[in-house]
Length: 333
Ligand code: TRP
Image 1: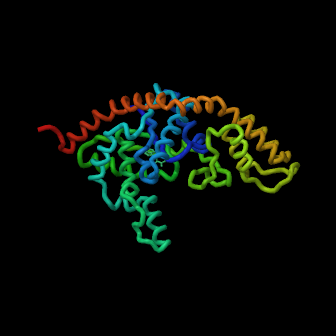
Image 2: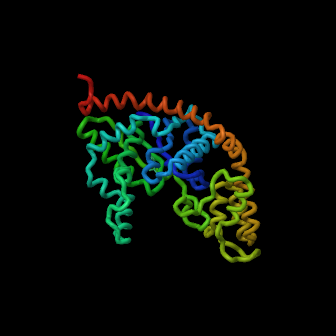
Image 3: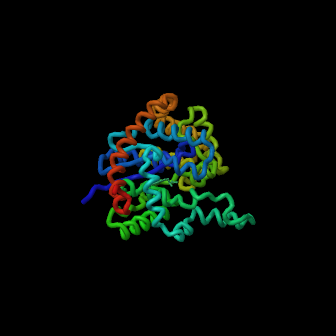
């Protein structure tokens, strides 16, 4: 059996928050540390350009996301960690795939369709503010995945369709040019969803996040902003209906979770529960935060790590790309 290859990308348009940590970063690092199979984690900076045309922001986000993964203990001997734009074979593969992808397939992409629908609802032209990057985004994502023949792709539910498209595209390429690609699968089982300040999924687009490496004071402030109900101290509270409890659970051991469940039944005051939640989260992130703060101001260190990652990634990508060029009829005379 060929080895399992796990790959995931992080779009560089924001500052990592607790939801990213619990849902993606922590499980990815833990899985790669098992040493079971090959791991590729990359900064999807070409994807960032689709929705963000603020150069400063893309650049800053790249630095912050890279520093975050490294500060949290990613072992770059166990996972290839690179920046998408350092691997020119990826856009090259994107083009080969673009030429065999049906336009109709892209028409059906949720992200694109939702934007068209919103334009129509607003009485705009259907194509208003839609760039070709957004339209063909699933092809770039397929290239990210197929470039390394990934089998397992941990993603959020919103990305399932993109994985189906990557499979379609891979199968079509294989059908036309021969068996070059394995068919990747979405792994949503990896990915836990954390609630945000307002109880909805924690997400930058809802503006309800708790950034991961806030200073202590700010972290406390954010935790205090988590929405609760009006139950008084002494009144029993339902842990299953509480964001405070849900975040607690994401950081707590089983014993600590049971402890807090009892505290809820006993009517712990919201202020007290939040105070304990702060202690728990702060305790777990404190050391990583120090490493993070050092790394972000020494970005040449991050850069060096990413360059090494790019070398490893290209060592895989170049031979495959050479094979693919040959397969499509582009090679020396
Ligand atoms: N589109 C993904 C997201 O928004 C990020 C991403 C880009 C990705 N390329 C990828 C994820 C390849 C997995 C594999 O979350």
